[in-house]
Every structure is written in structure tokens, then in C-alpha cells.
Length: 66
Image (cartoon, rainbow, N blue to C red; front, side, top):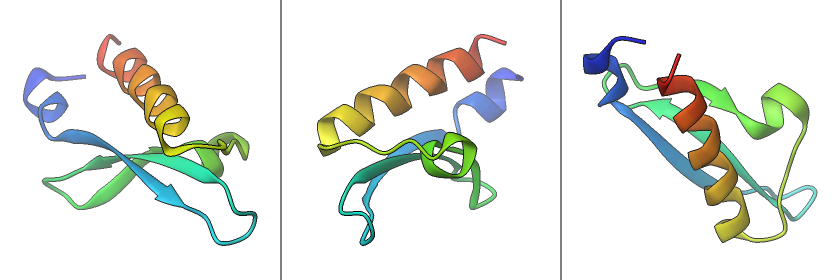
């Protein structure tokens, strides 16, 4: 991944209404698109926003090291 694009990525955590769990999304702020999502990718959700944020940050790190 090019370094410039890497700077535009951020992790966001959202509460899902059904089921009442948290998910993370990695967004490209410059283009306004979702690059990856715990729910869309593998139907993974978390019991707390902190847990979702931690998992999202780990995924962002693995994406940016490629």
C-alpha cells in the first residue's frame, strides 16, 4: 500500500442495531469509501466499542504493512 494512501485510512467503530453489537470499519477518508469491515468481511462483531476498535486497529496495521 502506498504511504500517501495509508495516511488517509482510519478505523471507525459503530453500534449495530441488530444484533446489538459493535463492528469496525476501515475508511479511506479522502475517497469516502469503506476499505474493510469486520461485519462485511467475516460477520464478526464485538461486545464493546473498545474491543471492536482494538480489532480494527490490528486489521489496519496488517493492511498497511503489505
